[in-house]
Image (cartoon, rainbow, N blue to C red; front, top):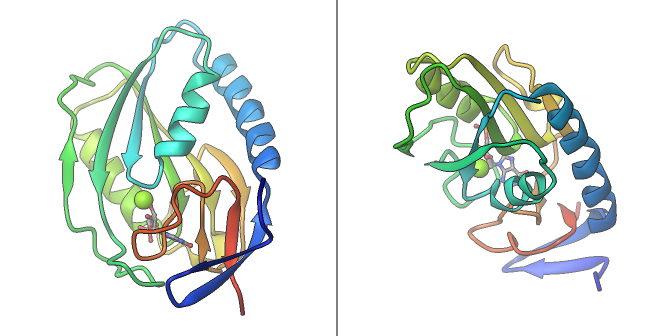
Length: 181
Ligand code: IMP
Ligand code: MG
């Protein structure tokens, strides 16, 4: 059951993308990934915390042999706008040299996080490196990057739910909500 309005701390949010729509889109993307990576045994790299729900939903719908791991990074510091700095990267114990790597993000906003992680992963010489993101804000993009798999293109508004948080809360909402103007 979803409600059309949620309150998180001092802000109100209105429903934007319903859970059923998200799940349909995930299945479509997974079908494309199944096709593109057939026989390649990719390693799926989810970016914590935001991408955890999208990564798991996508992963459950993959039908080829594949591995799963997670990285952690942060660029927002609790507020409503990107700080523009990527504070740190933790993770990757797996050897990705010569492997087909698919990085999974919750959202590409300025693109800073994705660019930073991409260049970190590239240093390990993967056979290929692609990016899947649940959400993409083309109007906010400040880097020359095109996500390979996009769930939904959205306007440059602040969103919560489906892994995205406002000050740490709202990640567990199954629908995606937009900040009420
Ligand atoms: P970027 O580095 O500017 O592309 O920002 C990427 C990160 O900022 C995402 O992984 C999110 O954690 C966070 N972020 C960007 N836009 C939103 C939003 O609308 N709501 C919540 N978090 C966001
Ligand atoms: Mg994130």
